[in-house]
Length: 473
Image 1 (cartoon, helix red, strand yellow):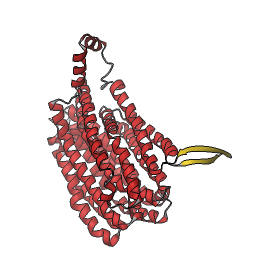
Image 2 (cartoon, rainbow, N blue to C red):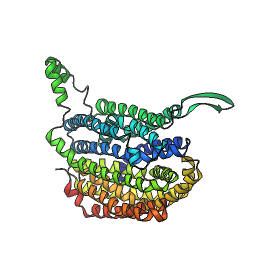
Image 3 (tube, one colour):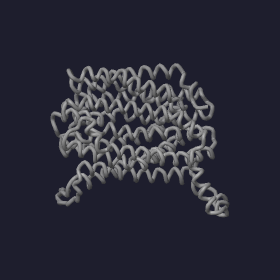
Image 4 (cartoon, rainbow, N blue to C red):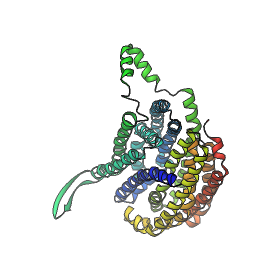
């Protein structure tokens, strides 16, 4: 037990730090844009759920490859792990381009579809377009981080996410605001700025993510011992040099095309997750439509509260990443008993940590909302929403980490159905019923009820053991 706890902590801590850096990026963007006024905050909030849809679809599509990498590393089949990585790179480029084209095509009319009006729509369209245009590179980033975590290397993935957060702050400082004078230690310093507002926030974050993606892929493909697919064997380079140029190029690209078995396994894992994420984000978009008639203040408060709450569930996703790696490698090594033990251990740890985070969220809500927005009405609505949500954090943790456990063995169809059934059949009807009478509080009360329900059904499946019988063969 001590060894399992130690190993879980070693993997979970860097993963939590990576999640923290990602959440801090959202805080940074939200706080900086919040200083521009309620309209710009509403513009970002209006399309944020739609961006999560596209990001989540690209991320989910790559999970099928990283899970297979974890299984092969667990079985000490490193050559197959490298082969899966190569095939994942090809799939990432194709899928990222496909999603990017769709996103760019709907960027202009999307804010209007979501109920936005006037200047809010234009700023929202620009913000959305910048992010979706970068999806091919972001998809490669998701794959690189996923395979590094699957190999057990949480430190590099986490460190690069921290770097991305630092770069986001730097880029945003120069791109969002105009040139201004700061006083540091009694000395006035002129800080140049592009005064690009919402567009600058999008460009700054994308630039930080692109740098992170490049470094993530470089480490996975050149430096990670179990995965490096370039510069490995001198005799392979000599043999390929002897081949004709035509055959060498043809063989190079063929290795990056997914084989039938790898593609089938990737689809078995990723297709339900991708569909589930699409349906869940679709539901979140519907929530945005429910909130939109409540006014600009409610839209902005809802977006800021979602960002603020992310700090609370960040440890759950970090522990969930560790659970996927530990359970996946145990399952690949044919140790189902160990996989089950890691499942119970990580879920219990996640629930304990997020219970503490829920208490912190309750008491810290006013300070967090003051940080994100200077507008009193936005602060008041956001604090009320966050204090409702704090009650759901323990059960939310159960659903997050248990889902990571089940993904580790490749069991995604039933868990995906549980996720989107819960949000569509529980959260949305309650939110639509309560919003007219309770306003934004009603929407967040519906979320709290649904997350508690979701946690209960995931705990039931975890303890039933059914997930171990539905993994990849």
